[in-house]
Amino acid sequence: MNCVVLVKQVPDPNKKVGMTDQGTVDRDKSEGIMNPFDANALEMALQLKEKHGGKVTVVTMGPPKADAALREALSMGADEAFLLSDRKMAVADTLATAYTLSQAIRKIGNYDLVMSGIMAIDGDTAQVGPQIAERLGIPQVTYVEEMEIEADGKAKFKRLVEDGYEIIRTRQPLSECPVAVTVTNTANKPRYPSVMKKLKAAKAVIPTWTVADIEDSEENHSRYGMSGSPTKVKKIERPQSGKSPCKLAEGKTPDEMVECLFKQAELDKARA
Amino acid sequence: MSNQNEETTKKEHSGVLVVVERKAGEPTNGSLQLTGKGKELAEQLGVKLIAVILGDDESALKTNAESLIRHSADEVYMIVNPGLAEYHTLPYTKAITQFITTKKPEIVLFNASTTGRDLAPRIAARLETGLTADCTNLLIEDYVDPRTKKEYENVLFQVRPAFGGDVLATIVSPEHFPQMATVRQDVFDTPEADHEKTGLIEKFEVNLDDSDFLLVTEEKIEYKKKTVDLKGAKVIVSGGRGLGKDPEKGFELLHELAEALGGTVGASRGAADKEWIDRGHQVGQTGQTVKPEIYIAFGISGAIQHLAGMQGSRTIIAINKDPNAPIFKYADYGIVGDAFDVLPKMIEMAKSK
Ligand SMILES: Cc1cc2nc3c(=O)[nH]c(=O)nc-3n(C[C@H](O)[C@H](O)[C@H](O)COP(=O)(O)OP(=O)(O)OC[C@H]3O[C@@H](n4cnc5c(N)ncnc54)[C@H](O)[C@@H]3O)c2cc1C
Ligand SMILES: Nc1ncnc2c1ncn2[C@@H]1O[C@H](COP(=O)(O)O)[C@@H](O)[C@H]1O
Image (cartoon, rainbow over all chains, first blue to last red; front, side, top):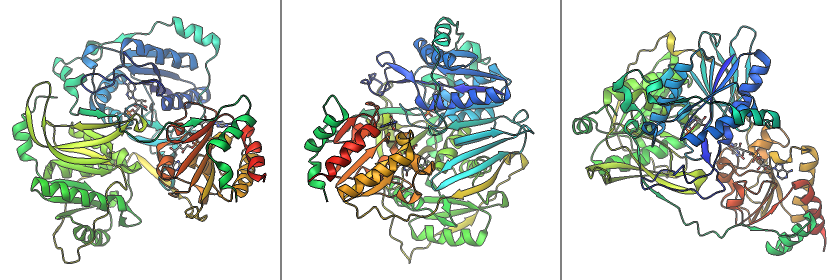
């Protein structure tokens, strides 16, 4: 069972986000973390590997320092990592991002599953997973909370939808027809890396691929980065919510905090 | 992109298309809202509002099509095929792509539902065009590219929240057609039905083959309908997956606190999915929308689908051990701490006096 897992480095939601003049996220100014949903996708891949053998490969597209997300993935147990980094890849929208990642997946080859998080918490688009599936010409199952591989090599998925869930099965074994899967945050609890693995991951050599490494046709260079992106960010606003920030209760013990909360929120008035 | 000549591209695209989603044989409310908004855009552009609807039962689709005409569509196309009886990504992608390539609309709108967000990106990639996710507003405006200074007339401005709602981004796709967006449910009104209105209803043929049917849906499980009425509650005490250490105890404590405050117990989908509490208590996009005076969330992260159901509460209080949980951005008061440490004291204080 060979899985390629796509992990994205996203700005830490709790640090202030820098913006560029083009209205895109300034990744140089933002502290990066691994997109939380991608950790769920990676955990699912690692569990499949533990059960069925095979290999877990992680890929990210981003600036050179996005290797931190890959090292985190290696320390959780991924076998191999590739960083896609090139100025030509910068300012990509979902179409260009999916094209870039799919070219790398083709180069890695020999995969049964392509796994990603349902969405990245910066763009919140949830588009890259399905768009990669389209580029690779393979079926997709989105919003997957559970999956199983059966004795005949076919896969069974539990897919969340608005009013319940669906059970979906592949007609062919994954070895004949790979599937792209996007994984929900309720799927599992991502493991913590061991200290040993962390040390090892810190020293791992991570190959960096540029456009030239994943693209044979000169003509297709325009499919990367800004030139490959139909959408443009016209503007970004921070809506004035008018809401004052959350007042956190003070106190050294839970009891003190509860007392503080009751006073601040005038909860005693709510008493029946 | 592969240097298309945008002048010709734009001219040959005309009309606003809504891809209609069906549920239990009827167009969803979200789809009717889209025809309402789509009609507004079409009128501004002086073009037609087209709707496309897919399924296997022609007479049912015909009834739907008539309803869509009454709800502001000018033309409705029915794609009837045994392979389209239920939603699957690949056959729907192929059918709708064939339709778009033939009819060449300039704008295509989808619902930002689990179906729309599965389908639209795949179609956009096949058409090599842009797609904006989960829009909360759509406008027609002229656009000047700040880099090239090039001017574009009548561009679709697609407004959407990003960074978990921290920012509002306006996205344009001035050189690629159609301009495509998925649109969030319930931001636009459902148009009134006009019973006099008539319009064109026609069939559109597509070719599907075995290669489009690589997955099988074996089961669809629909959760039971709502039972507990949370709408009238003045106080709602809600629990989420953060009570996972001892869910039975956790919800017992919630019930106790709710009773002491004269309120009702609510839950996140995370908790309901784990069956810690009956589905009838679920708050959110697919649960109930509530507006109590006080909403207290224990161990709920504040996912967008949950917020959709409780953001209108007058006072929001969050108890979460993660100070960075998104719920704190929406809460008025909060405690960073373990729900199990906080609950007993809260019950004691609520009961005292
Ligand atoms: C189509 C669709 C529709 C959906 N509709 C809904 C809906 O209607 N309503 C809804 O709620 N969700 C809905 N969801 C799910 C939603 O995306 C989230 O997955 C869900 O709301 C998460 O539930 P949660 O906050 O309880 O769990 P989590 O996101 O896992 O959060 C648990 C929180 O508890 C905190 N915590 C952990 N332990 C403790 C402790 N001991 N004390 C205090 N805090 C603790 C954690 O820090 C965390 O913030 C939907 C999803 C989809 C895909
Ligand atoms: N630059 C990237 N590098 C690697 N994976 C990505 C990248 N962008 C998006 N993804 C993957 O696609 C998923 C959906 O992202 P998005 O469509 O941007 O919301 C993420 O959870 C990642 O798994």
